[in-house]
Image (cartoon, rainbow, N blue to C red; front, side):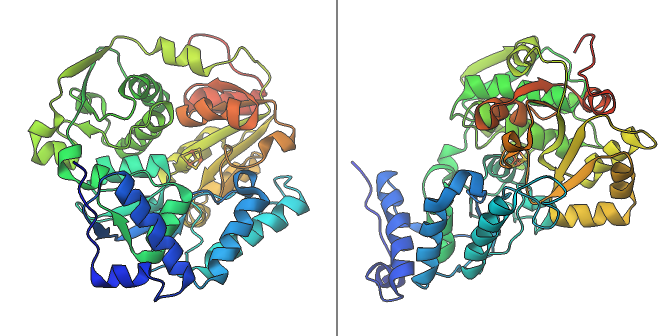
Length: 413
Ligand code: F3S
């Protein structure tokens, strides 16, 4: 038998329209989801992250939907952040974005700002805004951020859609089902590693293999800690989570001895099914097309941390790039990297440190890009379908070599 959704008197009042048509529409959405998924109540959310920000994906219909909702007086009741947009909001001209696209993208951001949303435009809000409290309830939409929040931070969020996240922000609540409930956070698949993980690309490749197998389940990595470096640990975990969310629909994973819930409750990481990963070759084969000339090298998916920008700067210092290089990151991270001298070093080589966007949501096909090289498994997984480009996938050293010579380097992966 389905549980019945119980609302508080205040929630009932919003549903009757007493707070106006905008909040009523939001409450209708949140309660409809709650009923579909058998929630018994709503739960207040500490923060919200809204996706569906790029005009490339939203189009005119999406923009009109946002404007109409804002016109109805809907305003956010919880701190709310935005996922990447379709362009760098300041440097779009340098990157070749057209005036027409820029004007529509700016209209989208203005519409979101009318709700009271902070225009953060990043998929790594945990690197630039506040780090949520472990155990707190969130309504985040970007799949890699959802994975990081649940797994590495130990907060609780389902993977919201763009409109459902916005609805949760407007009522300050989400329906308590799925990963908001402790009973759904148990591992479903134990992952045992026999393959060495040499670099960030290997972590992404592993994520692709595990994501495909785990689907919507909860993988638990039993022997990963031995392969996790102390420096770059968060970066490896964000890459791994992003790839699993892309190739499957993994929104939570455990790493025995590392992630908070697996540390506090080791039984959560035990699962009836096992996956033994002997080799990553299948993932590299899946993510690589046989292209040689590279038009754009993309680093920073999920958005680059300061450490990752520093590595790019060290790799291109004093060189002259033969092809375009975008390091995509949050605006606040870019500003700090500029202060530390890494942005000027990358720019002196001919590269760009791009804020607010990424190569999956920017209209790169309109910029003449046919082949893209990346060290991010998530970008490599999505770019062929989202942007109709061929992809080369390998570690940062190989990607920077491609940027310097304009060709994907030969030799073994
Ligand atoms: Fe972020 Fe774009 Fe990757 S939104 S996770 S950089 S595809």
